[in-house]
Length: 284
Image 1 (cartoon, one colour):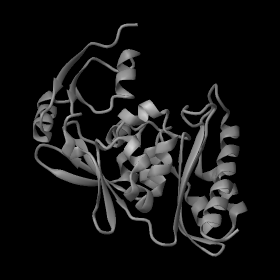
Image 2 (cartoon, rainbow, N blue to C red):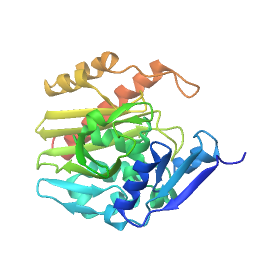
Image 3 (tube, helix red, strand yellow):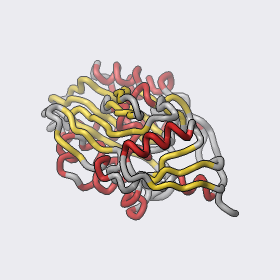
């Protein structure tokens, strides 16, 4: 199969990339790591387009300390999330999620911004952003805005980005001293997309979990917050939290697993995540 026909232009500055994106009026896409986009073009799952290569824009890379938050540039590679000490100490879910992404070669090229803009519902990083209440910093040629992650993902491969905007960075609140973050997933093979995955963030003191956030991925068109389970968990009833998933989640059935099986796995992962959070918080 021949790849979709594309145009190609390499940007030498963020301003130039944004200007080209605006001029394209929806007929161009940004090329960062390309680990999802190029595969889609090769399989003709994406329409003909013009590619604006932003790989040389080093100002979009890196992790910085912003006081009570960390700022992660859109071109930061998954491998950097996996290994950066500041990520491990301030937003450990991102480091844990990065290890689960595909394989080492892909993590070396794939970018945070590319993963979020592609908005695959089975991907780990979008669910991390929702669970951690991150802000997506979107930039156009004329403006810059911060979009709460919970509002950013709008549907299957759809985001709140306007056609002339790019993701510039992500701002993630730092984990507090009592906070524990856990990322778990179940896949058929290592490196595959997860059949079910979750990101748990909670303050753990003794046996109690407070300020919990539970975001599932692989179970809908966007990352799903399990609000009923969150409420039950904060009330100290793990069994009720697992039972609440039947109302919180509406998983699909496909050739890999039925909806009922995915719902069962969601409960298994929740129990495992809570057990780990409590153990790391000093309670068994």
